[in-house]
Image (cartoon, rainbow, N blue to C red; front, side):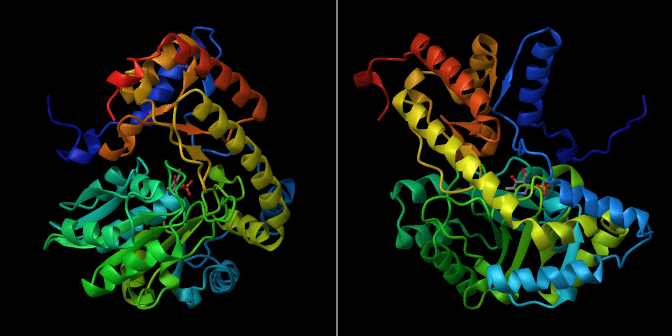
Length: 405
Ligand code: PLP
């Protein structure tokens, strides 16, 4: 038969999360109750005043094409937000409103990466990144382990700089960074970001900074946008989304801020890809920015409560994990069970009906880990932890003295 699908490797890449979700769904269809710790999505509904803003806009006839880059009011509000919160100075025309952060990253890689260009990706990294890079024809990515080593203190500033420099190749054009990080919960400090900035300036690289979880910070963690550091404004693409901060995953509103020279390309891919983000959702986004803060604070307090429960119980079970300082994930090491991350995730779903994502889905440095998302109710989390504890007791792994160091 005639070939249907184009001969492009990216179209054949599988989705680890998709596989876990399909396996969980199959169990649910068979009547079993699965606890979902695999999905990376707030369990809260969007606050009602944001929903009302969309309805108001629709009733008022805001149903037409906006400026393809986004409504002027929303871009003005974002310019002010970026200046105030992120110390990024830009013009409304340096901002494009996108269909969420995923789309912002898609546009960015399309505009930045030519055939044979390479991007270094600090890892473990969000699962979508290999596909998003893969859609840029002929481009490639290389994972550079960073977050777990920085979190553990085994990689200091000079070591980090040396690791980045050693990874660079002639075809390397830039670095993708994500802090707070999905899946590890690591938050890079100003000093660690300064190290990256130093290497980027020295080697004339651009940086794509994915700040999807900028508001989900715990303890003394502070969010620093790398574009605000010396020499970085002209070489950084900053990507944001309302999905996580305001529980608006289904609304598909994100934005990208980039130097004007690059924005020409980003805006072009945007315009001919989707034309514009939905007008009414942009009105809702404006409302979220205007009066959404108390909701962000309320959700944050609840995430923090869950985070503390999760990390203390996993550590008690011997599934060691760092206390995440950002996002809503925890990334325990499961090596003590003697299973690899794939087997662990499969067996946990099979035996205890708890869905988690194997760490290698986030790049090779995720081996021996699984991602656990705590954007689920406290009660469900307690139940899931009880099930995981039972599972770990049944799978004690080799005696301590025989375990790999
Ligand atoms: N960046 C990271 C690191 C993410 O984890 C996600 C979603 O899971 C996104 C970006 C994109 O989210 P959205 O497309 O919903 O804005």
